[in-house]
Length: 329
Image (cartoon, rainbow, N blue to C red; front, side, top):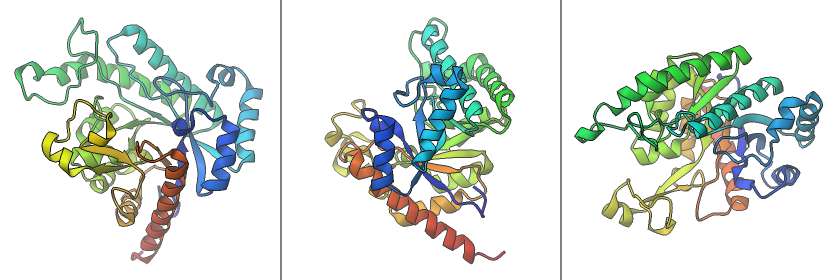
């Protein structure tokens, strides 16, 4: 986001999987007019009832009609989302998720959409593993060296190839990897290693994960700078009694929500307008164009949370613009 271009507000459509796309767009225009962009599921683990990938890839006419229908509601495609695990030790699942991600990149290039949101994935810990192994650290002997093996054998080879593929489809397209626990990219250090594999790889910042991991979202945004390509709008609320007893790593997450040490929340319910305004300021100079509301608050329905989040984010964007205007040239 350059100083003279404001962030736009989007919404991740996973909050409205049971609604036809036209119904979602009509509702957004009436109840959340601040929203201008859609982040649309396109495969992998991401459900995609609003995006017929096979038809859209195969037909110029279908793509044109789909885009025109979205534009008629005053909306645009901010990103396609194909979050999954292309590094999964189940080779068939990895193949499916890799195909979904590459198809999302192909479709984004054909549509002129500049962002595909993804996860970096998580391999097994050793040959023969049947499930992913999160290589978060060497606290115990059986955890030591896991990440480095994953990096050399799977992470670096896969993501260097994927970066080259994305650049060949559209040089300006950015595959935005969410810094997400449980994957091989979850903080600044791990993202930096993957980002060095190619300029097509950018970060999708979701501050809700930073809150519960103890990270400073403003500093993360500032340090990553122009490698930030997309942002999710989601908050975290801490529940002090349960946090005191069980800490942040609760095996039961996310249910039962009422007994969790922390839960995701509507932006503004965990961190106030000033915090979100500060994030907007920290994103100045990034490549981010949209902050997409990702509604995952277990206590608030989407029809309440999305409009509330949109109003909060609009206020933060406007306050950030005012603050930038007062800075010395």
